[in-house]
Length: 237
Image 1 (cartoon, rainbow, N blue to C red):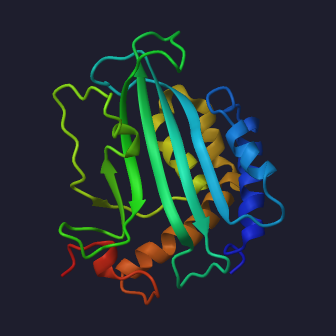
Image 2: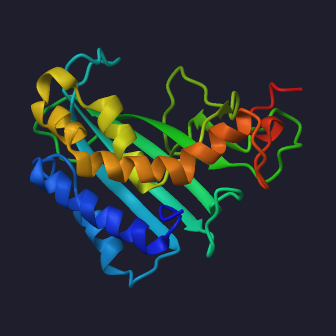
């Protein structure tokens, strides 16, 4: 299974950077974060750490509330891949990913100025037998960036529940996720061109085979050493 190959992961991230530059996404994505990640690696990389990989997004078609003029979406990713990756074991030894969404009233506002904000946290739970339902991998609102006591939550309340079952995403799938969900098809012709590029499709397909296929095949009943229906989706009794 050549897609379960550490050197291939590195080469795919390098190729992702090339394609994002080719289709001129570098005006909206701070690619130096990915370049720094690659710069730290040799032939093989096990530990991945990205802080504030930021996308600058139009609000067109989103109807944000409260009304804002521009958005940024930032990825924080911290995970460690197994030394020997396999389709029959969880490829992650440690895992955490956050999406931090900031909304600015003024289109010319800098990133450091006041913003409205929201956060999603994708986590791996070590204790799936806790007091509340705990899918092994789960998405929930809030996240670590909202735990600062100085943050004014207004009339909102954030709690850990519900924890929504969701497969993990590596950095390739996380970038693909943000482009899919936050960039307007109708206003960004380069998005459809990127998605139609066979090299891009190959990169995403290999990431899907490494990360998504074992997750969903386990839910469908395939044998797996780390995943079961019950720990991935506890609504299964």
